[in-house]
Image (cartoon, protein in one colour):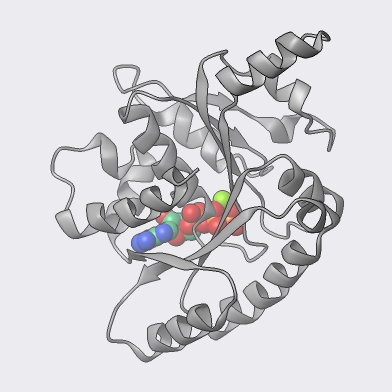
Length: 233
Ligand SMILES: Nc1ncnc2c1ncn2[C@@H]1O[C@H](COP(=O)(O)OP(=O)(O)OP(=O)(O)O)[C@@H](O)[C@H]1O
Ligand SMILES: [Mg+2]
């Protein structure tokens, strides 16, 4: 709970405020859950208390957490989609996550727009938009970015927003088109994630790249760029 007393409130907020990372794109299958689960595993392995909040009624992040073996580094989960509410308030957070939480990672559903988009933007510090190389995804993402940047919450208090390219096969025409699109945006294009079956297999076992000793170096350096950008906060 946030104390009512002003002096205490300032102290509690500066001491314990977690960074809230929203992963969003209204386009289905762009890699939101993959990014959210892998980021959660990264921060948890870095010994930061991480909470993965699942806003998608499909429950993919929640299922990923349920598949995770007990001897793996702990990631706390909140199946927010089970709550029939769009009330995503700061006090709700503080009541429902461990007191020492450092990172809150929010996985969102496809089709995100309107009130829920606005609420989630309001309650986030940074926003990451994954995009896959396809003309349909590029078109859908253009509309989503416009909705996001024009949302009352973002206009009132602009967030740090970035795009990443996901399922990338370099040296393909579709990727060249995606890269051109991402570089034309007014928001930073910060990382590319390779198209690899690793993510598909790992998702079955509740694992992320950073849980494994044999992760490929080029994949790790892709994530490093994304994480450095997040760590600027
Ligand atoms: N970099 C990648 N390489 C290979 N497969 C990937 C990659 N990223 C995601 N996938 C696979 O693509 C599919 C869609 O990814 P994911 O579930 O993360 O997208 P999503 O945006 O969360 O989808 P939804 O909108 O349905 O929630 C999954 O099967 C996932 O394992
Ligand atoms: Mg998903």
